Amino acid sequence: MTFRAQGLRAWLLQRLSAAYLALFTILAVGWLLFGEPVDYAAWRQLLGTPWISVLMALFFMALFFHAWVGIRDVLMDYVPHLKLRLFLLIAVAVLLLALAIWSALTLVSVYRP
Amino acid sequence: MASMRFRIYRYNPETDTGPRMQDFVLEDVQPGMMLRDALLRLKEQDETLTFRHSCGEGVCGSDAMNINGTNGLACITPLAGLKEPVEIRPVPKLPVIRDLVVDMDEFYHHYRSVKPYLIVHDPEPEVEFLQSPQEREKLDGLYECILCGCCTTFCPSFWWNPGKFRGPAALLQACRFLVDSRDQATAERLEDLEGPYRLFRCHTIMNCVNVCPKGLNPTAAINTIKRLMVKDMI
Image 1 (cartoon, rainbow over the protein chains, first blue to last red):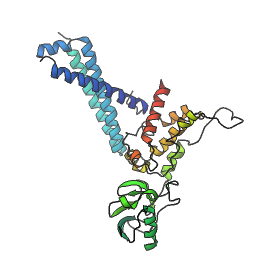
Image 2: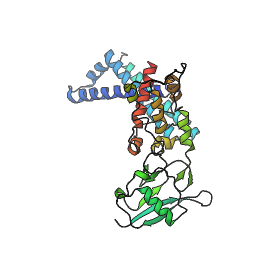
Image 3: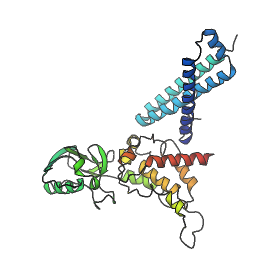
């Protein structure tokens, strides 16, 4: 959806993902600071809770979409050389996609015995 | 304040190899003098100094220039507040024709592109287009633009993508016709501004708001357009 350089959609996605990222970060940091200290088992159990997994997956999706729109904007502004820009855009897309797959695999791995 | 020092950008692309800064001293500076008055007196010292000016009261928008690093109109910039030597350059980014005179073609191209006139699809009424006072109020802060170019030429997004980004002045005009109750081309206008460049290169840097000599707010106008687009989408 965002790979095609759209104006309104990219901007909306940036705004919505920013709101989610801000909210999630505040809650996560608050939980880490003021919640009970967690050990590995508790951490695993937490990530094994389906609705937490969904929130985490949404967080990573929002993060990567937000990063994509932001970096795309920077490259469009500061890299006027078209071939170089295309190369960098592809490099960023590949990197973000790899990170997305990695985080998805990590989230799913908790459910395996 | 008896005398004032100036450093003014001089460049004639037809004869000079490159631009240079020329120093001037203006004697007998009077209180209340504007920069335009000073430039006119300096032109008496060196007749080759070239700049645009006309009305002398911030209405025509001819004498936009970069004054000590900030865009403004010379005719309504008081000498009293300026740091010396007063550095005067043409507005950034646009090609220089001579000294402080720039080629505004690109700027006007973007202005024309937003179709800055009413578009009506219905048969035209027998009488005038009527508008309620409330509908008319929506145009306040939009119609006053004098197209001096201070905002667009001070916008980093315009510096990076001058050929594609419409710029604050043109987008302010786009908004002026989008919110006009008499205009019937809302969908077409919004469609035309879609895409990553024409409108969405704006990153709300707000240089346009800082330099507008008429105190207008193109950033707010751009946000209004974005809101209209979201509304149009839903």
